[in-house]
Image 1 (cartoon, rainbow, N blue to C red):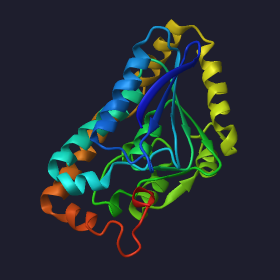
Image 2 (cartoon, rainbow, N blue to C red):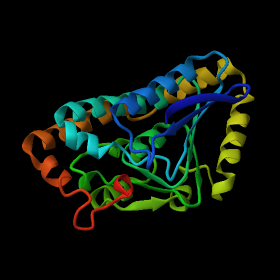
Image 3 (cartoon, helix red, strand yellow):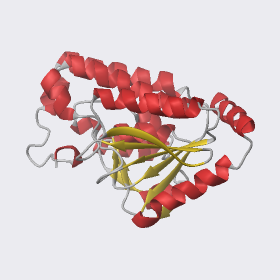
Image 4 (cartoon, helix red, strand yellow):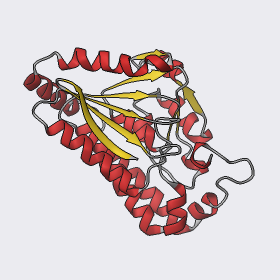
Length: 253
């Protein structure tokens, strides 16, 4: 259980997240993920990082139960941890390919929205259930996956979009059967890793430099409203209904 790194092929680092039962990450998990991606990207032998997960889904966001148990200390920790993990993926010195299966919710959107390319299985769904969890954030990253008005609709309703829908919008590279996900992600990573390593790093820096939105600053701006919701008491009021009155989700299954 945790975050592990392996090198299945020359030039490719595979970072795998495994926090049963649903990959709802605790504070330490977000920081561990940030560290693993950063270390992999700084390795001069790495030309592409593949981000994947074991279990029922790619990512179910933050561990709501940890926040309920520890209050503001956990909220502060997870907000900093998420910010660092998302930034680590985005600022990784080499391209990052996200291989997504099952559910990709909340913080999962922050990860894939920060990645350079996304490969998804046919069963993958993407969404931000933040308003149902007493939180805000990652609209910055969802806006990188779908058009502006769809982003707002998904955000306000907590609805999800399928991998096929994101493929139609151009944000998912390929949608494949579940048993072909790993090989397809590796195929794309292999094609990227075949390029000159130094040139790839320059390309990554150049592409990040021309992005119209500073996603680190944009996401931190969003998090300020999460703190406001927490201080006002509305976050606890909404969060306390989590798992009740039909509000269940992947995180408490």
